Amino acid sequence: MNRTEREAAVRRIMEQVSPSVPPELYGDVVRRGGRMLRRRRAARRLMWLLLFATSVAFVVWALTAHPWVEPPSETTPPLTGW
Image (cartoon, rainbow, N blue to C red; front, side, top):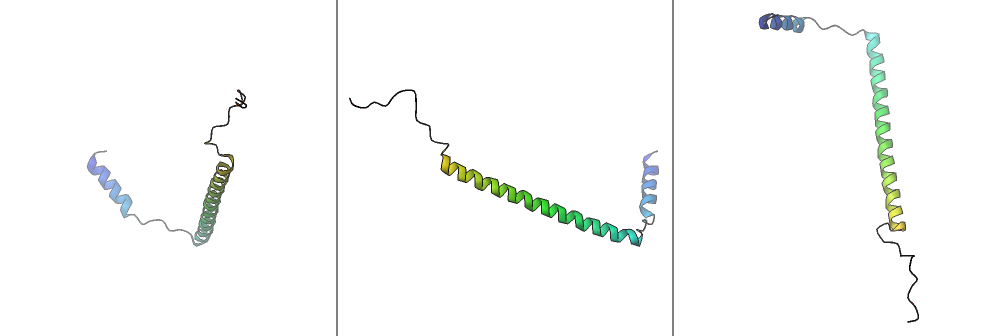
């Protein structure tokens, strides 16, 4: 197909009447779409809650364990009585 034939084919396709959706199918699609949106919203909220809970748990652990402090050395005894 050359360019003019392709353009003519595209114009024919675009000028055709779009197919109509059966009325009984429309209700099912709307119901399914609403259900999908509710599930996505619930999953998104659950993920944010999980992220918040893990960040709070990390902050509490860091404040109690002090992982940035070097542990005392246990290989040499303390120098006392000099």
